[in-house]
Image (cartoon, rainbow, N blue to C red; front, side):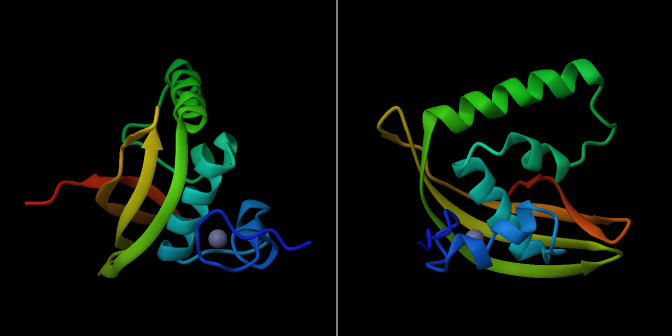
Length: 134
Ligand SMILES: [Zn+2]
């Protein structure tokens, strides 16, 4: 049985985001973006937290709160689509990925477009934050 990847790549999960979720493959910023979206769809909160950084780093109490918020978000949301619109390398181990996420929350459209900042930490890309569009 080949389950389609929840990142909406129309590829099997086993050869798309699963190896990234299992830590078997180092993703590019765009692949990480896809894998994080798939992790949201699968409520893989640990993966989501492992692939993001805050500056300053979150305190243990804040990490627990973040996990709770993430779990709630995953449970209340249907992840209907993902379109990668752009990836740009900024140099100095930074890159941005612009995407459109199609989401449904409590049966209401909660879709959004975001330009995300990613940074390399010890050779691995992590999500930093959204960059607001001017
Ligand atoms: Zn995928």
